[in-house]
Image 1 (cartoon, rainbow, N blue to C red):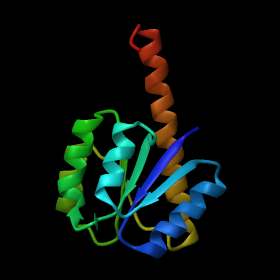
Image 2 (spheres, rainbow, N blue to C red):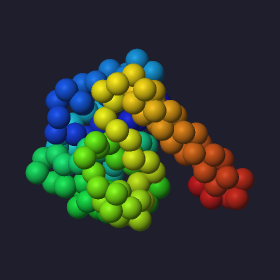
Image 3 (spheres, one colour):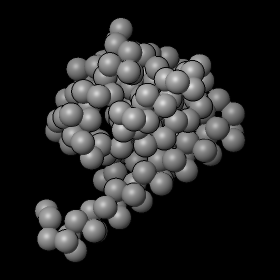
Length: 136
């Protein structure tokens, strides 16, 4: 099953994203707890993480580098409407896969769904390349 972990302080945003990805057939975990995010990453139950600007009093800029250290192949999509360009650049350097707006409008929902689909396609492609190259 394809695991998506949604981490955001905003309850409405979490619910909207959860409904969107459950309906699309993903195995979804929703949290506003940094500990739950770390647990999901360490147990490898989630391959894609949708993370908001801040949750559980931890800024995404602090948590993303830690998540990437726990699992450097983790695919992180940063979901925020108020991030500055310099912050987005910094997070890209830290290894985020994509920056998306919160899915409040249908076009934003479609963009986020496509980003997650692309993330899983990239994971499958990398896994296939690893198998061809003898890595496991």
